[in-house]
Length: 159
Image (cartoon, rainbow, N blue to C red; front, top):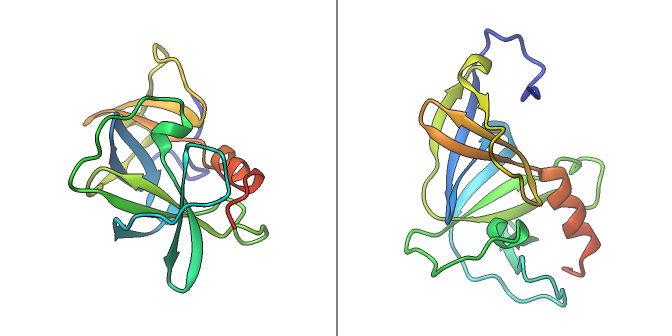
C-alpha cells in the first residue's frame, strides 16, 4: 500500500473528505488553502473541457478544474451546493502555478485518518487523475493525483 505521509504509523493525519458528483475525494488538510462559495469561472483559451475557466481568488487569477471531467467521467447536472476547493499546487512554491480550484458538490467533512484505517481498494480501476482508490471507515473515496492535475493545467493556455 502506498504511504499517504512520512509520519509514523500511529499518527493520525487530519484530512478532508470532499463530496464530488460521483463520489468523494480525500485530501490532507494542508493541501487545501480554502473552501469558497462557487462562482462561475471565466472562460479561457484552453480547449480542455475539464478546465472550467479561471476565477479571482485573493487578488490572483487561478484555474478551476472539474475533477470528474479531468478523470473522463460523465457529469450530470450540477448540484445546488457547489463550492470551489482552492488547493495548494504540489510544486507551487517553486513552480509557476501556486493554487488551483476544484469544483466540489458540497461541504467537506473533517476526518483524522490513521494508516490502519485506510485500505486500498484494489478492485477499482483508476482513471486519469486518480492516484488511489481507498476504503475508509466512512466509505469509499479517491485520492486525486494533484501532481498530474498540476502538470495538465500548466500544459494548457489558462492565463
